[in-house]
Image 1 (cartoon, rainbow, N blue to C red):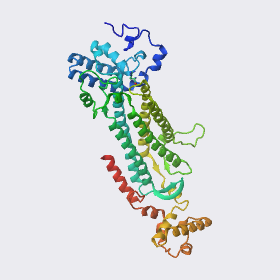
Image 2: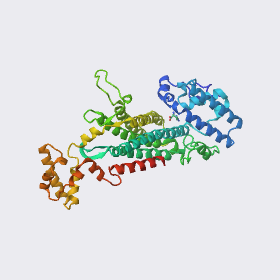
Image 3: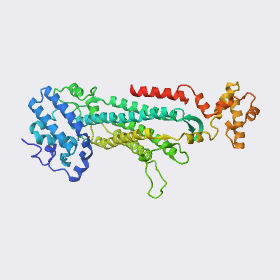
Image 4: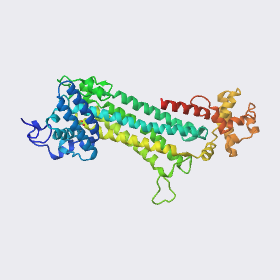
Amino acid sequence: MSSSLDSHTSQTWGGRFSEATDAFVQEFTGSYSFDHVLAHYDIQGSRAHADMLAASGILSNEDLSDIHRGLTQVEDEIASGAFRWQVELEDVHMNIEARLTQLIGDAGKRLHTGRSRNDQVATDIRLYLRAAIESIRSQMTRLRTGLIDQAERYADTVMPGFTHLQVAQPVTFGHHLLAWNEMLARDDSRLADCSSRMNYCPLGSAALAGTSYNIDRHMTATALGFQAPTENSLDSVSDRDFAIEFTSAAAITMMHLSRMAEEMIIWTSAQFDFVDLPDRFCTGSSIMPQKKNPDVPELIRGKAGRVQGHLVALITLMKGQPLAYNKDNQEDKEPVFDAVRTVHDSLLAFADLIPAMSAKPASMRRAASLGHPTATDLADYLVRKGVAFRDAHEIVGTAVGIAESEGVDVAELSLETLQNLSTDITDDVFDVLTLEGSVAARDHIGGTAPKQVLAAAKRARDALNS
Ligand code: ARG
């Protein structure tokens, strides 16, 4: 009987080959150096597959117990670092199978009955991503909890709201933080959505066409916690759209984290001075003793670029592939693994940092008073007194011009000056011209009034805990 060991090569598939693989080609085509992170999921999949083979009468119970014993030892060896990875065994799947066979003999060779590395790897990545999404989402929950806590703490802290990065209208800091929470809530639901869409089991699709053994695909799907088996074997072994979808959700999340980072960087500058980040999240300069740099937000802003890059890599990887499996797909792993690590660690960093960030209400207030932030409130006041909005806009424009020439804010103009512009103005105008009056007036769902911020924070917390 010929075995792979008798052939010209030491590879598991060496039977039909008459010369050994070129050493560089071995390195070039090998993937164990990165796909070893799938080992745990590969073993999990093998256990479920073996159980199903035995239950279907394809594998003896004796072989099954040998396989379980062997897989446990392989798992221990990998965990302890004693496992010897071999480049000539190409990838995680064949490294594990070869070691298993070394440990338990022929039963190890029977494990691959009715499956292929093609359905095996498609299963492994799904299992890996499903777990990765779960741990990413738990960091997301920590971060969102921190944002909601801070929003309650700063529900009535007034800061300037910007459009075009020009002071526009006063808002509350709590409102701003809850805007971040909304962005992340959508990211979280994208992640959940992608996790449930990928939760179907490819095992049994074998190389591409299915298998001639009388297997039970429902059994493996259930054992591995999938919703059901996948429908079509060709599609199952070839498409990596789920990985693309995950990376897309990760890229959007990183884009949001990057926007948050950008604001924190601006806010910690001396010119803004809106927030303080604790020293433990910052670094100094080797030359300028006074510096305290917001490195964590800056790195997160930078790391958003690499995840965006991974998305482009993956979608490009897929676009030219005919059905079914192609080796191109081995290139899916490094981008996906890096996207997972990057988005997870970035969320973790912000989840630690946000609760420790403190606002500087006095500087926020000072900044909010620059640039006539309550001019719109004056126009709205006139409209309430019966002036048409366009006329009100014109009157307030004139008032702003006068204030500018006097070097004061529109809120500081005298009642007399204002009444010269419109006889509809009475002394209650100053209630709406204050920063507090302005934010309190935006008192509807989605508005910046402190009352609304507290109500929104409560809804956000309920949504998070539901
Ligand atoms: N390492 C391979 C991958 O990541 C496993 C599947 C290989 N299948 C094959 N027919 N060469 O895609």
